[in-house]
Image 1: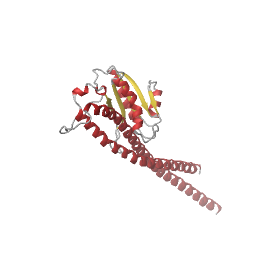
Image 2: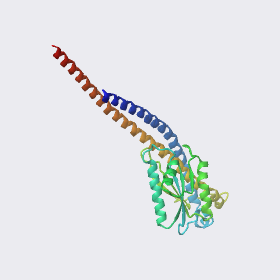
Image 3: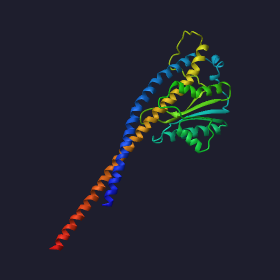
Amino acid sequence: MAKGRELKGRIKSVENTRKITRTMEMVATSKLKRATDRVMAARPYATAIAETIANLYSPELAERFPLLRQPATIRRAAVLVLTSNRGLAGAFNANLIKEARATIAKLEREGSEVELHVVGRKGVGFFRYVGRAVATTRTDLGDRPSATDASSLVDGLMDGFIRGQLDAVYVISSRFQSVLSTPPASERILPVAAPEVKGARRDYLLFPSAEELLTQLLPAYVRNAVYRALVENEAGFQAAQRNAMKNATDNAGEILTNLRRTYNRARQAQITQEIAEIVGGAAALE
C-alpha cells in the first residue's frame, strides 16, 4: 500500500495548494474591482484636461513653455518603468520588462543616452541582475497609488526636462483594456505634444490669460499621465494575478481528479489481490 499512501500524500498537498490559489484569486478579484474603479475615475479628468490644453494651444504660446519644447534630436532620454512588487501574475512583469528593453534599444540605436528609472521590486531585481545602471528605484508604492506618488516620480524628470538635461521622458506600463487584456505600452509624456482637437474648436472666455492657465495645466497634465499609468498598471497586475490564480486553481482541480482516479484504481487492485489471496488460501486448506 506504499503507492496508495504516496498518492494520498500528493492529493493532500494539491488540495492545500488549491486552497491557497483559490484564496489568492478571491483577494485579487476584490482588489481588481477597486483598481478598475480608480482607472474609470481617472480617465474623464485626463480627457478633460487634454481637451482644455488642445483648445488653449497655439504655436505662439508653445514657444514660451519649456514643457512644449520639441527638440530636434533626442540626445538624452529618461525611461520610467512600472512593474509590481509581487509576482504570481503570469507574464505580466516579463511583458513590461520586454517592452522597456525594446524602448531602450530603440532609443540607443537612434543615438540617445538613456537614463533608467524603475518602480517595483520585479523590475529592480531584473535590471540589477543584468547589470543595467539604474538612476532611481522605488519599491515603496502600494496597491493604491495616489497623485502624490505620481508627483514624486515625475517632478524631478520635469525639472530635468525644463533645464535641458533631458530631451524626452517615456513611461512603460500596462494598459488596462479588460480583465483578459492588459498589454504593455510605451508612452512619451515629455515633451507634451499638442493634443488633437476633436470636433469644433471651443471658444473660451479666459480668466486669467491662456498663458497663466497653461502654466498650471501643463505640469498637471504630465503628472496625470503618470498617475493614469500607475492606476492602470495596478489594475493590470490585479487582473493578471486573478487570471493566473484562477488557472492554477483549475489545474489543481484537474490534477486532483486524476490523482483520485489513480488512487481508487490502486486501492481496487489491492483489494482484488487480497481477495484472491484469501480465496487461494481457503482453497489450499480444503
